[in-house]
Structure formats: structure tokens, C-alpha cells
Length: 300
Image 1 (cartoon, rainbow, N blue to C red):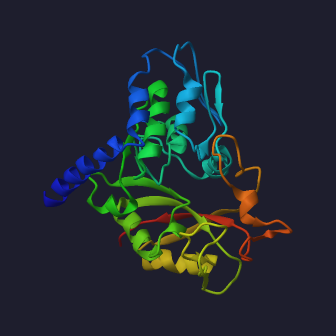
Image 2 (image 1 turned 90 degrees about the vertical axis):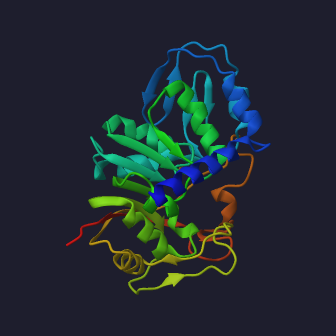
């Protein structure tokens, strides 16, 4: 009971973040959106069509930067920095969410969650402590009208959350944590027995159990702490308690997937790589590669 009360208090405290001075005008704009019935398509581009009198473009621009997408709201195409459909389609053949309780850790504006509705899961919960991304989600969901639950919480709150999940997605989060094994243990604790984690993270080539520890930044990102070889990542996952480690896919991030657009007004992958050698980051490390794995929790 104590943990549940702590979670309730935590949620109430986090909800106050939505009144921050830079978020409050966005929430006020959302409160003025008109109700209506809209057509929704959940393909590579999450599309909403129909009739609206709202100035969608201006409201969407208030919420920049848009990192995940793409979205098309009426006549407004939100060309996000990441073409998230590429990653989603890469993973799509590796999961089936029908009637499952599903969480997305670091869900950003909910692009993947919106797509996952096609599988008809029992429950969809997004975890992300960013008030801006929560506001972007609220904006899209005003028209989509999903039953997705969005929590302003992080991976560390999974063990006290009032649901255990059958499937947890954790895409592009692990390398931001200074204690990756502790994070993997949190994912483990958030699962039902025989539950699965779909994980993606940066990796470096090599057969040895080792990892890159960037001095100050990796690909201009300061909060990248460890980039492991795949054998090192496997060891982390086994130490966290998982009984199965399966490599699903590997990929190299390129300018087709991540690039600068008018919807971010900032730098992107092209600025993070060595201008004379795209196989290197601007710091001289190997350019970003991703490994996608499935982890299984099974208590014996």
C-alpha cells in the first residue's frame, strides 16, 4: 500500500509540471481546440483528416521541436527529425501485442504507441517525464481519441507502478543512463513472468565483452555514458536477470532516418558526424550503429 501511495503522490507532483511557464501556453492552446469526429489512419504517417476550424499549423509550431513522427494533421505535415516509421517497420515482424499489457519507456510524443493500436493490445502505457512531449501527445490524441495512458514517469518507476507488463519497449534510452544494469533491472521488475522487452541501443563492433566510454560526448550528445559491444550488452542483460537474449536486427543510423527539418530548428545527424568521414562521429568515434534485441523474463 505504501508504494501505491508513493506512486499516487508522485503522479500528482509530476502533473504540476504541466503548469510550467513554457508549457502552460501550450496547454491553454490545447484547451481551445474544438471537438469533432475525425478520420484517423495509423500507417507510416499517423494521419488525421476531416474538417476543423483550428489553426493546426500554428499550434504545432508552438510545440517544436518535434523529434518523433511523421504526423499529418489535416493540411499540416509535421516532418519530425526522426522518421520513426523506419524503426517501427524494422521491428514490426518481431512482436504481437494483441490482448497484451504494453509499455513504451521514453515514449516521446507517442508515435509508436499510436501505431501499436493496430495490434489491439489490452493496455498501452507511455512513460516519459517530459512535459513538452506529453503536450505533443495530448495535441495528437485530441484528434486520435485513443485510450493510451501517458505517465510523466521514468523507467525507475516501473517497479512501483500499479501494472506489470507483458511487453515493454525501450528504444533509444539505455545509453542515456549512467548505470545501464540498474536500468535493465528496472525493466525486469516491470514485467510479468514470461514477459518480453524489445530494446534498442547503440553498439560498437567487437567480439570482446567491452564498451566505449566517451570522454565528454558521443555524436555531440553529452549524456551518452556507455556504448557496448553486443557480447557486453548480453552480459548486462543476463546480470539484470533476463533468461533469454536474442538479437533481432542491427542497423546504421543514416540521413534517411534522422535529419534536420524545419520542425526542429536545430542540429541533427549531419552535424554530429565527421564532415570528411561519415563512418566517424565528430569526436572521432565510430558512427552510431543500433542493435535491437528481445529479452525474456522467466523465473525458474
